[in-house]
Image 1 (cartoon, helix red, strand yellow):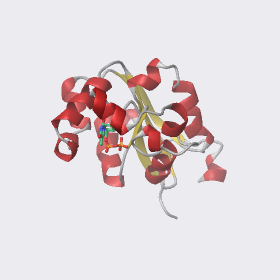
Image 2 (cartoon, helix red, strand yellow):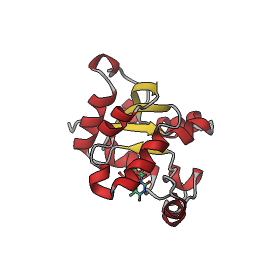
Image 3 (cartoon, helix red, strand yellow):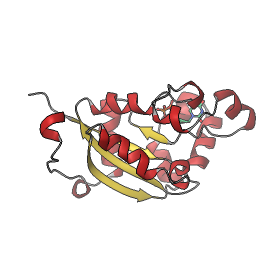
Length: 164
Ligand code: TYD
């Protein structure tokens, strides 16, 4: 039997401050994904660097600095989710990076609309509500960065008999 995967999701400071936590967690539970870790954390500069360790290299200092400021604006909620092809499935559910291009039905498409042009013109970070691991390797790195072994749980949900 193929194994399930675990993936990290962050509800970013705008999602928490807008009171969207319950509705966003609900979407993942509705899809049958299992919550195997959950915490609230205020990211500091060091931790932000560890989480987005290659962002500056990929997109430059401006993007990194704007993102770091945004992520440290308030607490985030971290979720470790388990399911079938969980990494790809959760990426599909959150939608593409820039909300203006994210399809309706995705979290970024339904709860935000900011464009890349607007963000660049104002020097703002893209307030796109959620982070999700981009690959299986990234998910493994992020799971251990955010959750100690004893914070990662094994249990059975009633739904998994049907959805896994
Ligand atoms: P990235 O990993 O490319 O996107 P995703 O979150 O969809 O995996 O970038 C990480 C975050 O950096 C992204 O969610 C928002 C921010 N960012 C900007 O603010 N401006 C940009 O031009 C890019 C590419 C990213």
